[in-house]
Amino acid sequence: MFRALSLMLVPLLALTALACYWMVVNVVENQTLEEEKTQITHGQRIASVAYALQLERASVVYALQESNASMLGDTFQQTNKAVREAVVDSKCFLDKEKFLRDLADHREILQENLFSNRTDAEVVYYSEFTQCIMEDLMSLVKDMQHGTLWQNHVSFKMLLQATESVGMMLSLGIFFFERGVLPLHDYTLLREEDVSAKEYINIAALFSPFTQQKLDLLEATHPTVFNNINIFRLQWLVNNFTEAGPEKGREFHEAVMRYFNLLVGLTETVAQKVLEDADDEIAVALNMVTVACLVFIFVLVMTPVLIKMMHMLTSSIQNYAIEASQKSEQLVEEKARSDSLLYQMLPKTVAQQLKMNQTVTAECYDQ
Image (cartoon, rainbow, N blue to C red; front, side):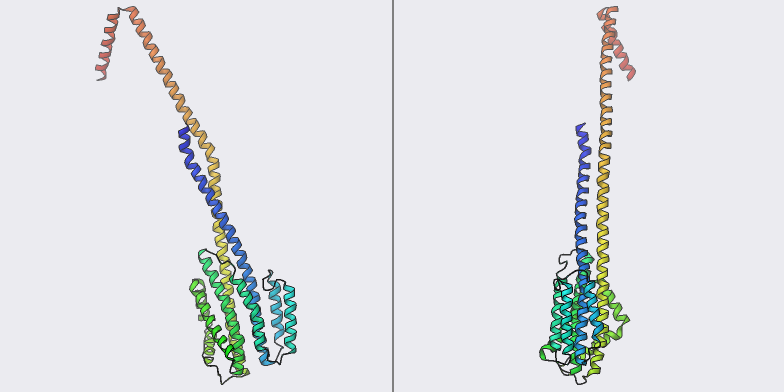
């Protein structure tokens, strides 16, 4: 019986161990995915602040070139709203209210000195914040290893970097197309940011087929926006633009703002795709946990049932063997009793001869 139970219990124990392994692996997987989703959500909320600061930087540069601060009110309100709605704090502004107060103080100084040549200082001021936010965002979820989820998240990060480069390109380009020339350092930075923006977008599309598909759709539905950007890129190949002026600066500002908004929209679409992929991966992990639990419950329920059935089977076999042994003993006793009666009725030699004749007759009959 023990051997029979061992043969039955070994596979059940192996199935139990496998179910426990599945359960542990998928519980850990689910926890990892939940943490990654939290970080991704955190990154998207902080990214909205980066977008707002990038736009404010460009608007401030444009206002300085136009000597007109009337357009900045709405931009400042949008930035304040983005910071307050970010929900979570970043290392770049651990105290949001203090950050907003410092920003308000800076804006007040800016408006008081609107006619001074503060363009470079403003680009540096806002870029310090946007670069800090980018570094914060790039540090999130570095070890993600979940297929398309990882690919789309890398693509999202590259698009974030592209928006920063386009934002810098917008701020420096306004100065270039209104004045016709940039200091060598700024001109070099303009060209570098332009190249960086294109490279980041190409890498984003390379990592994610989804991003490539959406980018192709944008280029097909907004050909004028992309064509205008390419035209402006040709015009700053040399650091001497002869047709510079306020009107050209406004054209550049409007064209790049349309391009920037498309890029931000693409980034947000990819970010939403990352969250959807994370939800799908979490659902798969939860399903696997459910399956493992069902297998574990099945084993727990069936083990006593099978043990009971095995016990009943082995008991039946043992009872049958005991019964057969008892009947065999009874048969031997009956044979001995019949021989004793035969020897009492006949002489021993005649009885033995008779038994031999009966045996021979039986064998012949069997043949």
